[in-house]
Length: 406
Image (cartoon, rainbow, N blue to C red; front, side, top):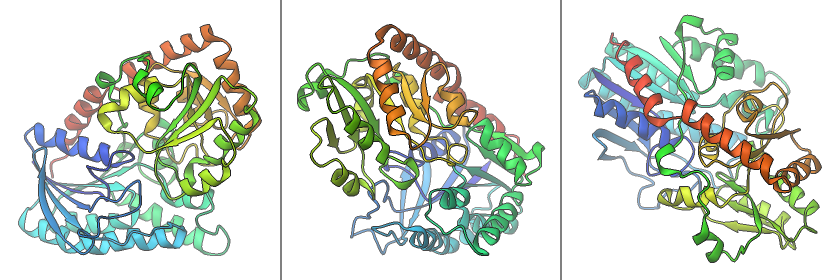
């Protein structure tokens, strides 16, 4: 098959959606499909583009995939309106590449990844022109997340118009997938016919993450000694509700055997560092290279997975899969019954979003009960192997794509 893919994020972006788009298109190419990807110049998670790349369209090859990159607007402070302009700029910049591919490449299948939802109509137009089927893959429900996290004002006619656009766009797909059972059910609630809904999970790098790896190199480099590490690694953005980590650290400041380590980049990191001023039990470090992921995750006594209230079933953080694979317990913030709470059940503790005292108590409960923490870590690794294996997930995806020829 000839497969045309549209997605705003791709390698070499180290975290977020980029690695999963890169893995999916590489798997399709390895299976013998001819794959063309239209994507943006890399900007995430630092929300910055190399100045030499900003105005340019480029062509490159990556893991057997023909990659066409386009410029886009990237705000330094990605507020709600600026994010809309950001996604719109990508859709408009990708439009000529997608139309040219529809006419010359003549794909059998067009696959588009949301975010960005605003680029889905571009993919739909290309699919109609090429008489191809359209597959929409939803990594997060960006419309609801924007209102839930306060990026967009939930008053007035805007929410109704935005949700109406979302419903219409999602129903335009021949296949619509998402990354968890709860998010797939939400697709059906938005009007997507159940027969068109497919679960396509993100995966964990099981083979590259050794359970209970000690992370000794980081302990020495960062002067951690024998202290227990409460670790957050990932994007420092608004959807995470990450401020709770600083408040939890403040409550645990008297415990000199516990240190909070935050590894990440993002638009809210500077604000977070300001909040943490004066706390000696908080360390900030940049994102670490992918080849050191196993050592970094093994550094944790406890992994931290904060989320804002109301956002737990709108996204399923990609970092969760690798946390589970590391064989360490997790403290997550989520309401009972949500997708995140169910994924973490038996592998850690879940506390109410925004409740820093409850998070601090959960961290202490796991650190002070090593036997319980070890049992949860073992359960986490087992769940990763059963449910988050890269090879199994990609094999299932490739097989499903093989049934989607026009």
